[in-house]
Length: 329
Image (cartoon, rainbow, N blue to C red; front, side, top):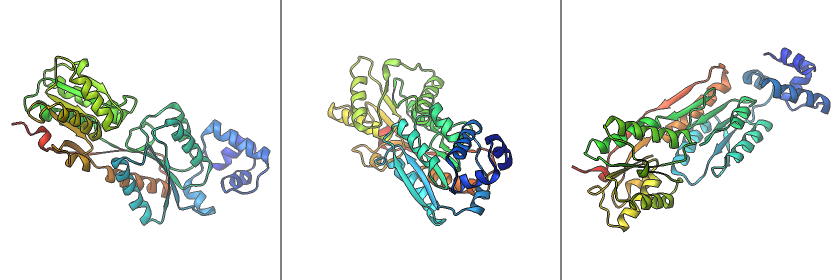
């Protein structure tokens, strides 16, 4: 749909549509007609065409789930490096893992002038899809796959599979799992599926009593490990969806005299700095978070310069960082 077709749909002139998108004066009744047509059609004018007629703000909105996470800081660093070289400034919004705040932040950036949006979300809803479809500027999702939108993501299933298989190949036969919210497709669902795939391929059965769901914290990892070891059938290897969860589980093991890796092999995902400095250095899948930020920023710049209309999904590789926590001979 071009601007003339959209103007006809809205029942206003082409010049009125142009003034609307360039923040010019417009009567309230015409503004209401245009916004109603936007809701119906999801129309968004060509970014390159608009920038010819109006000033680029050189601002990019970045929506983050939290600020304290090492992985999020690495992603943000990558975004900043790439966009900073192009003269862009970042407007950071911390949603504290509240999807409702993600929605309000998307609406904020949709209504206010930024040149693009990068979203780091954990859980997607129909509201996310609706607002992302109506964005008037390019948007890129980093860290998750969301069909129909530009995304840069990790191979979470593959990472979980490889780390679990690493322990099973060393003779473990009672695998346990501490995962994350399954509504989080990447860290929750895909890492659970990777664990289950490795266990099944090894000819073993996933024991529901040895599977827990934790929050993204050491405290939660500690509590879930406590529950895992409360039964008679104790695990001999433990895959954790994140390094933070694994660190909490290891703290419990240390307090209870459970030897790592002799009694229990344990591994995580993320390859955090903290994991390398634990009393038993943690084996972990290295996800290229900074690279994800860089590639997300590059994808956004590409969309800004030349909207292709074709959504792309870029999945990054992972590396296995094996350390003492799985070094059973």
